[in-house]
Amino acid sequence: MTIALNGSDLTVTQVVAAARHGEAVVLAPEAVAAMRRSRAIVQEVLAGDEPVYGLTTGVGERKAYLLDPAQRQRFNHRLVLNHRIAQGDAAPADVVRGAMLCLANSYAKGVTGVRPELAEMIVTLLNEGFAPPVRRLGSIGQGDLGPMADLAHGLITRSGFEVAENEGLALVSSNAFTTAWACLATADAEALLAVFDVAGALDLEAFGANLACLHPVIEQIRPFPGLAATLDRLRLLLAGSYLWQPGAARFLQDPLTFRCLPQIHGAARDALAYTQNILQIELNSSQSNPVVVVPAGNEPGNEPGNEQGRIVSVGNFDIGQLAAALDFLRIALAPVVTSANERAVKLLQAPYSGLPAGLAAGAGSPDDALAELAVAGQAITVEARTLAHPVSYELASSVKGEGIEDRATMAPLSARRLAEMVSLCTRVAAIEFVVAAQAIDLRALGPNGGGQLGLGTGRAYRMIRELVPFTQADGTLPADLEPLVELVTMGTLTPAA
Image 1 (cartoon, rainbow, N blue to C red):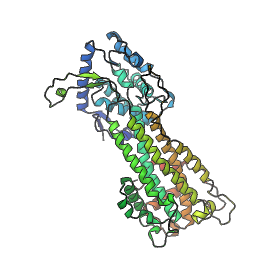
Image 2 (tube, rainbow, N blue to C red):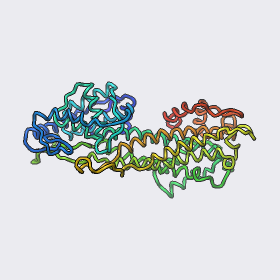
Image 3 (cartoon, rainbow, N blue to C red):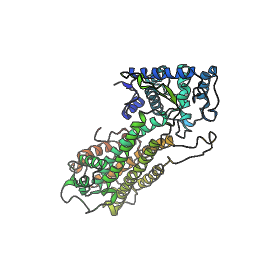
Image 4 (cartoon, helix red, strand yellow):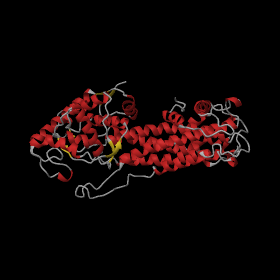
């Protein structure tokens, strides 16, 4: 289905669809009309002699410099070139395509004062599958100046588009790069939580856990939405499992990483919901500076008012809410991955699992079997946890721009760290699946042992075994978990799939 941009109702799902799957995009007719109205106000202002930031003056430290009318168009072109300060390797193509979509949607609100032709150029190149190289480093989150300048340069070079007054500034003075990366990373985090639900449920069966941890009274007396949703998911995965039979539990109370599985995942789910709400608002907001105030009388269906159209210098490029929300989500994900790794380690330890050490197939074997997977899991978990450190309060310096540019959200770093953290977590989940499947086989719970797994966990077990066979006595560790990592990343293991 074609995505129509109007600046008001773009969703994260649509960003993913356009950025990763090439969904077609168009500008809504009302968006084109809104852009024409705001551009008319820009033209009126340019015809006068009032100093207006970025239109008739320079920017940043040179805000007091008055531009000669003959300089303005060239100034906007130079503005793009002078802000190409990004560093490092190129961002993923889906992030760049997402930034193009977010940028066009912000123009569709009709408050940046750009011509509709600029937004149409971006949409055209997006539909052609174009994604210019955009370096990922160098933005402090007060507008993604460096990456957006790379993006703008690539778009202009490819299309031959000539920017007009205000348009160079509107191209670079946006957080579209961060917003797009946040959309993709948050979507991936949601899919990851669903995968961890499956892995956690499989752990419960592999451990012989007590399913009192899923009792309906839990959400009744502690009604957090994320907790209730997680309990529902775990019950669905474990429907028909041997664990529901009387006497199936090995212990009255299991270790906390097993017993508190719904609470841990539920907390992350609530943090995710908060972040998604913030992101939905940011996705349909204008982050530009300056912005055009369109009189109410210029809106269809309204009587003409006395207020004149004007241009206001604002600070909407400060996206502190999104930066902090992304920090919050990473913090909430840290206990999820820590607990997943801890469950895997406990399954590998005979005193906890009641199975041979390292889940060895042969009793009394000197081989490590799967024991060393604990080392890999711990290493990756630690690396993922370091990415949970908040960054939204960081500030490298306060002297840029004669001391005026003394604030930073570090939102792009917050979004990038979420993406990196999710990627690492998928590998921990893959290790967790391999360990749980081995323990299930040793308990004779798989298809050859009576088919006592849950409907969802049984399906996941079978998919795992198609890629990673049981490690026999005197066997070696799985040589390559990448196919399983890919399966986890694709979300194929979740019940919805």
